[in-house]
Image (cartoon, rainbow, N blue to C red; front, side):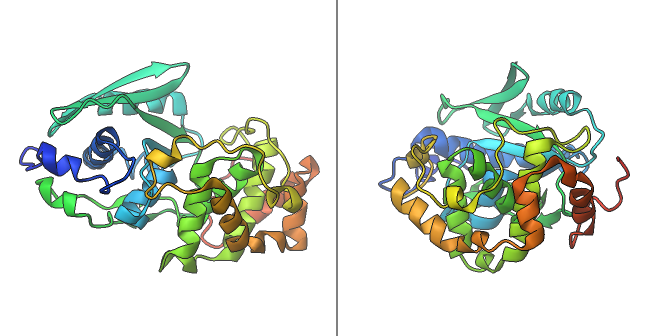
Length: 315
């Protein structure tokens, strides 16, 4: 049984957060508890068969390890475009409502969104894990192992590899989101990826194309699986590279160590992603988000290198 033979102690859990940081015991407990929960979802054949891991927590667990920022959310993509995501979310909630090792997980739903409260002998975090289940990824996902961490040796079991969205697609989604909302966590993740070996070798061309296609889909949706985003906007390089009037920091200082200066983070992001200002003619058309380009967008999505959409016949 997962975690039955763990050797975690309160002192060891407390040391999971970097010394001298603002990252408290609650965040450390959540970070470790997420590992137990993810292993459980693999064992139950939820991740891989039904869901693909994505987002900021996936970056920390499978790409960055201890060098990445902490994240309190679990984001997933479904594996099939026609699946009922509401029903699947309820199924996942049933699976996570359990006790795994030293952690107790209690799911609850509010306004269609699920979150999970974690309790343990170490601490009962006031922050809950938010679970988001989104539409399928556009590129064929890959299977990656957890980045090793000293704390893993205390778990009493081997963490399994996870099926995860490709790095380029994760970054493209963050770029597209920054077109409509100034989220500090996304800027932090983009800077991390562009400055950390070997991940900075990602394909900038693929990221740029994916990002502009995601901007178009955010504005117009695509079939039943991909809905329009809230307050969508076209991608305008001058606007994207202009200083944001206000950043949604979402307690970034409690999730990253050392806490970033938002103005310096923005400047560095603009410098590292300056290639977003060099759109091809085709990418410029997607960036303008004209609804009449739907057929071209579909064709581009299906022709992407490593496209997962080539086999779907939904339109």
